[in-house]
Image (tube, rainbow, N blue to C red; front, top):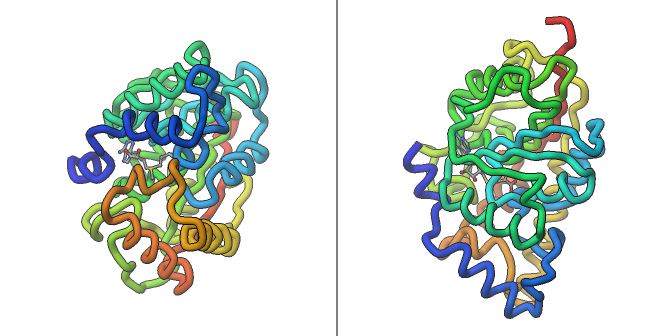
Length: 275
Ligand SMILES: C[S@@+](CC[C@H](N)C(=O)[O-])C[C@H]1O[C@@H](n2cnc3c(N)ncnc32)[C@H](O)[C@@H]1O
């Protein structure tokens, strides 16, 4: 677990984001959540994926959402600003929680969002607390997915949705490393779609919808890399999160997608009302 925290910890992330925003001409006193989307939606297909997942579930003003592995808070700010949700985010990486809080304050959304430093395997929340449990690109770092889903189910209200957007394994073939979520296989715990389906059912969920987004993810990622090739790295981008090995990780991500070693899935599961 410490390895995962070390993988994501940067040391001076907030300063480098604020500097990049400043250099790209953003007014920090009037920052909007969408000004951050080139960095704070730390998953394939960025904000588009967040918007699509949100459309799959019934979000309304006041809907209580838990974002597991919230990172620096892109989805939480999107759900709060676009849908009026109240969001609690939890993340293992303390620095990400701290950056998430600062960016949320700068976008004036602190009344709707709070962040907790903690582990998805031991959620510090009461049973039946949330209308929606949300997670994007976090379970790849979690080996005990059964426990993660058990905790998600426990804190979700009966009748509530679990919304997932994750990278899964697609074949027996080893991945090319490093990848954006792991330097080596020691920090990466991908399961197949079949296995995830079984784990969801074992936790008590009923599958509501399932969408393979791998083709769209490949197309989107090729576009991101092509823009970097043509125009250079943008001020604000994933390279700020991933550091020196960004290019290598990006090249491997592309190869893993092209060679069908990974797949990208959006899934929504229901905690049935009578269980
Ligand atoms: C690739 S980032 C995705 C962040 C965010 N969900 C997003 O899409 O922008 C993966 C995140 O999962 C978090 N994470 C990994 N294992 C975790 C665990 N056991 N409990 C909570 N967070 C975890 C990491 O700290 C990291 O912030």
